[in-house]
Length: 217
Image (tube, rainbow, N blue to C red):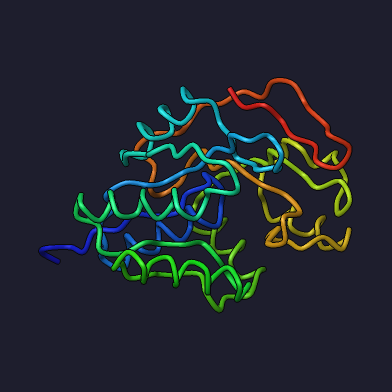
């Protein structure tokens, strides 16, 4: 396929967006750069907030530029729109999202893309949640749990690898296997879009009364 359409993506470094990026590449699109965000106001519990050196190593591992967007919740939409416009100037025609079935999230992404003249792409949309996590595993990706909502699941899941056995355990504990409602969050460390694995270690565990998170180094 010549003259591949370039895309950017809303990239949390987790499993769903990574699978969506992989499916977009398989469909013939070319990544121009990925957008990841970091909360600056300290009032909203955003996850996947990796240190810059980990993001740099991840970018090197996948061979795709990762652009860090610093923003507070109040200015999130405007700042994301500005970043999309810059990616458009760099040649992006589409923006990929990893949403599966939450309509409000899809509506938001579609409206944002329309405002920037970009085409939204949702490669996972309409899949069952189990189907999405199974395809992630079967495609050869590896991921670890870095955050859990302790009102929805046991904090003992922190650090666990995403495997078929873990999926069975989540089902036994009546936890959504995909974590689509924020039950848990992951970091992907290897898989078919990786040129080399991302080597990470876990540091301290933090708990704010609801969310338990592991620092990633």
